Length: 109
Image 1 (cartoon, rainbow, N blue to C red):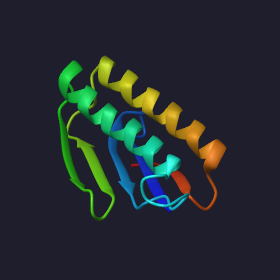
Image 2: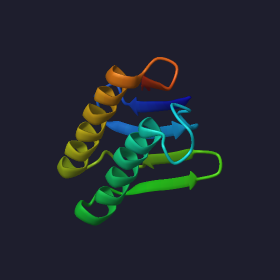
Image 3: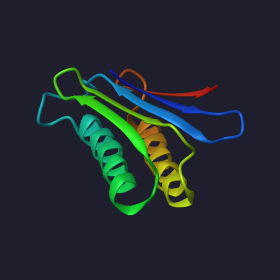
Image 4: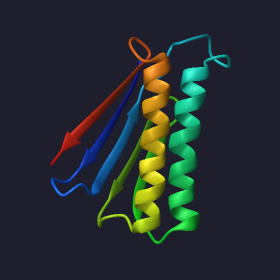
């Protein structure tokens, strides 16, 4: 199962995105849930770096299926829009294929 945790401050600023695990929806190479989640998360992280002034600390392990992206300061307007778009896409995947393969959590700190 892939578990994604979106952490925001009490004022709604993004603090961290953590993606852990492999979906297990299908065999490796055919897993559309894992592919969709990876595409959404990795594209957002890359877009934050290339298209915005948002500073993010990113760590990942393909073997363990982990991507962590944390923000020292609140993302700028463009960064927030990209993250909101990622969350929208992840919600759609979770609604369609959630349950045993994908879990989307929201935390407030």
